[in-house]
Amino acid sequence: MKKVLIINAHQKYDGFAVGKLNQTFEDVAKETLQAKGCEVKTTYIEKGYDVADEISKHEWADLVITQTPVYWFNAPWIYKKYIDEVFTAALVQGKLLIDDGRTRSDLSKQYGTGGLSKGKKFLLSSTWNAPKEAFGDTNQILMEGKSVEDTLISISNVYKFCGYEILNGFTSFDVMKNPEVEDDIKKLKKLLVDL
Image 1 (cartoon, rainbow, N blue to C red):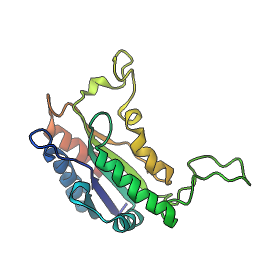
Image 2: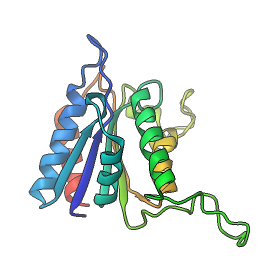
Image 3: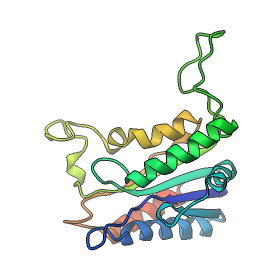
């Protein structure tokens, strides 16, 4: 994987969520991957984007990383808007995917197999106020044993629908009440070095 697109999905809320942590993780990812010899392009959604350019970046990249805070158990609404605009235009143009994969002539083809992006990879990097202990434990009232990946499947499935391989992601937990930023930076670097 020599060509990487990093999408920063942070949405600012003055005095509450200014985006420093997500920007730090974007910067760490970019520097780590460039040190590995990768070419890296970035998009910071809140600063604006051109739909045609974003489709081209996705076609160019071997690996797409979305760096996002989790607001109300999903990415900020601007990320959903970005996905709707970019991937709908890509579908209409026959780029990244051609359809949902099913055909009337071959009923064995499954929904979600019409992607043109096979061989590409996707990695989700997220920041949570929730502690790590909230996940994977059936005794937890809210998540009831669900993993981070289960909770954010709507993000990764967009890419899986297009044919991307979904990689194990990165999560920074408890970022408001008990942040461990230095340890998280080390974990993110290791994940990226080991790709």
